[in-house]
Structures are given as structure tokens and as C-alpha cells.
Image (cartoon, rainbow, N blue to C red; front, side, top):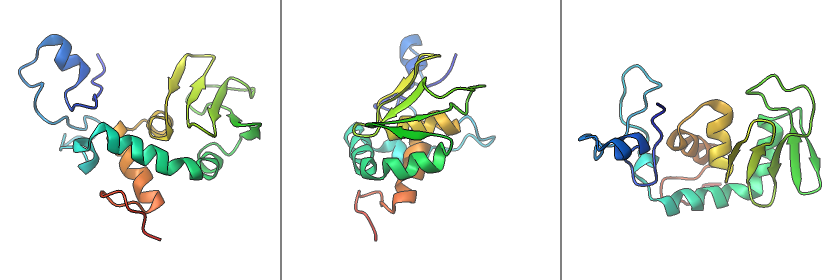
Length: 146
């Protein structure tokens, strides 16, 4: 079963199964050393939302970089899904105003730019948040450094 972090730090799997380790900080199991995640793992849900909101003005540039085969259609970015053998534009879309995205062919979806980055690059939410903050020049305190 996939171990997904919740905004409260315990994995859904651990909370469901009453694991005694459910209060430990989650670790990044993609890395062999299984070291604790970046500082964003201990951030509150509101700080994730603030980062996602701060990234919205840059979403068209991020999408052009992450999904270069796509194009703007009204208020959406329509692209091929790089996670599957997608051959036709139309089913993988991102709302440019809200950051919500979905692949209507597979049912994969998310509510913000952080979840999109995590999905596209097979990252944890915390790692995706850290990388987006770094790309945008936002420190852990939320201030943008120009």
C-alpha cells in the first residue's frame, strides 16, 4: 500500500492501521537512506496553500516548462500526459486560474500546483513544495526574494 502523507504528518496507512509509528515524522521512502523530509513536511496545511497561491501567477510559465507540448485553451492548459502513453491533446488539463488539474482518461487529479508537480515528477508533496519554493525564490517563511 502506498504511504501518503497527510497535512497532519501521519500517513493515511499508519492512521488507518493504528501503527505505533504513526506519530513519527514521515520519511522519504524514495531515497535509500530514508532520511526525514525537507522542512516543508513540518509546515502547516495553510502554508502549503499559501505557497500554492503564490505560485498561481507563475503557473503558465511553469506549465510551459513542465509540459512543453501543451497549449492554452481559454483558461486551461491542455497537454499530453507524460506519465502515460498519451497521443492526443484533450484529456490532461490544468485550470490556469485555480491550479486544479486532471487527467480525464485515468481519473488522476489534484487541486494545486504542488500536487501537479508531485504527480508529474513522482515526488512527495513536501519535496514538490520545496522545489517550487526554490524555483520561485520563496524562503521557508513565505517571502519572495527577487
